Image (cartoon, rainbow, N blue to C red):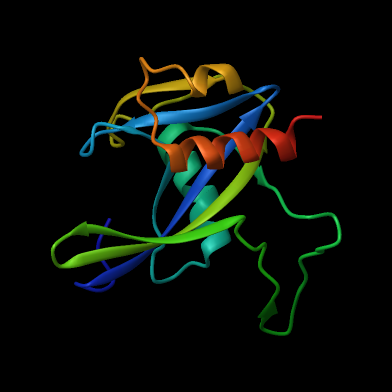
Length: 155
C-alpha cells in the first residue's frame, strides 16, 4: 500500500474478538505481535479502512464496535464515523510516523483465510491469560488494547 505522505500516514488497526479470544498476528516486517491493520487509503474513511484491512489480511468479516449511545448516520454527503477506541502516534523510522486509529470489532467465526498477498509470520487467537505469557513477548500497549477489547466485547 502506498504512502499518502512521505513523513506521516494514518493507519487503522483492529483488535478482533471472537467469543473469549482476541486475534493478534506477527507483523512480517517488525516480527512482533500486533493487531490486524494498515494504511488508510486516500479514497476511504477510517472505518472502511479498518474493515478492508481485516478482510484483506485474515479474511474475516467484522462489525466495528461502538458505544451503544453512538448511532452512526449518513445523509446528504455527511457521515458520522465510528470513533476509534484509542489513538496513538508512533515513529516507523527516522523520517516517517504513523497516526494509528485503534478499533475493536467482533466476528462470527475464528476461521481465518490468509491471503497470499498479505504477509504474516503467524496469527493466534489469544485468551486474556495468554496475553501475559512471557513466551509471546507482547508489548504492554498491545496487551492493554487487547485486554480492553476483551473487557468491552466479551459478554
